[in-house]
Length: 444
Image (cartoon, rainbow, N blue to C red):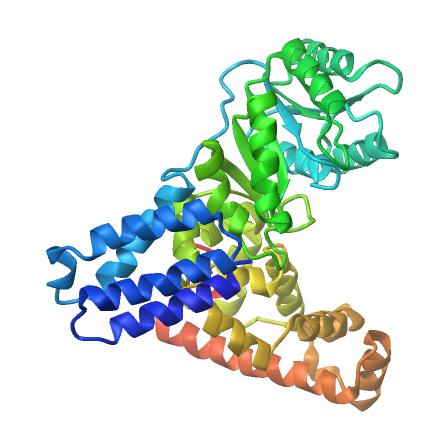
């Protein structure tokens, strides 16, 4: 989402860092480019103006211009001010009451139903016992969608087809109390546009269950419109936080940089894809560093800890250490890494993301990764465990089964052999029992 903004800011700061000394004119000229980059990224005009003004006020001081590394100092100031604009610290959900009540609101198409399931899944992994409430009785299949998601996650869903939404929400609360569930997540109805009737219904649901959290689910792709929507909902309903969806899209990122400062309400989560695990807590400082091309390794580690199987990683490390790494292990590891989402999403969290993504585009894209997986899955278990038996006729069968060519199969086998040699060499250098799990993309 922030690729264009990150590229422009990186160019500006590279020029500033390239100068041995900085004058006030250098700083002012650089910040003028920063302001234009922010406006092009659909950041609210007042927010961009205030941000640049605060940076300039700090950056033209003697401590910066007289510093041995003035360019670095300016980058640090911009990072600090970006963090402040987005809310300084991570704001967690308020879940002290039993059961805690979370009410999701927003326009139709913003992703409320999917977000309800994502939040429930995350809370379940954190040791909570959530229940979902299907209070959208208007959108066709909304209840079916939530029940399907709840069923897949083994999370109960309270739904009714006839009663009014406030009654459904009240019934879900009573059900949670009777069944010892500690969080109720209410998925409310959206509309194509904000209207008074919808707001009145949301007010009745709010008054009925007295929620601990009222979260606006806002589509980040709508840019400044998301900020306007948030203002309206906050004035009528009283928001406690915001969930930004479709952060993996091609929007310019203005909503993430503006919405907290304009509404005064924190962004609590960002959704980075369609799958139920693709939701992350929002950390302003980490997001600021990602925008400036510094990466977000901490979020990547947390994501890996949540999604990857530690036991599988330990088994894999042992197989590498004892030189038993096979194509089956290769396949298992690729499938594990897929849980972290698309390659582009992983690269976004690494320092120098723009250069890494450019290199990845030149060397291996998502299509190639999918082709490799298809080739590995077209092999028999025997072939994956003992690749030496894969001759010409087997390669033809594997190529037909995976919709690829024999030369593609040869390339996969060649890459595997190279990887196995490298792993064997590394294992030998480190000594017995010293091969770290992070070699395979896991934290130690």
